[in-house]
View 1: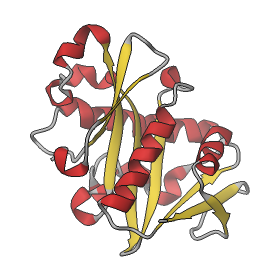
View 2: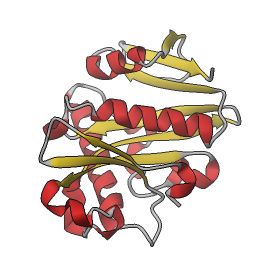
View 3: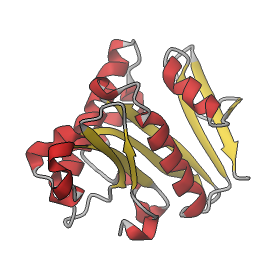
View 4: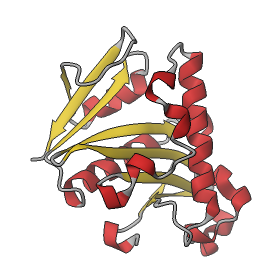
Length: 201
């Protein structure tokens, strides 16, 4: 349940007509279909945007991830998947995210995930925010949620991630949260590949 994972994060963003909620998604039947549909849309946008930047994630088998959700991000397997849901103010009185209709998937504006590398280390994956909602602090809300989940619920001692130097906003965000650059721990054909980690303190 959401309660078991701690409180849902709520934030007023610069988009004053909306309230932002960061919520865990398990892809279960009791959740709104809009949440899983929103993640599918975001994963596809993530793939397409990186492809336009010259990075093809096909070597990771990424296309299968939105078919097999939650897959390796399953909470029951020490993974996790969180989304940012932007609730319009006029709907805020009915802002139970599990009551969203399928066509409301457009309100799912960001995502982030974590998967286990081993019993003590998780890997942050798939942070993506719709272009229409960037520069509103959503990335930091998502990243902090996944870090808190890694320490408090997964009991990891270390988190790793990889990115690309050309994704300057993401790299700056991670460094600002205390992630340190490390030698590569995974394969990537891109020349500007960068790896980072953070230990639990």
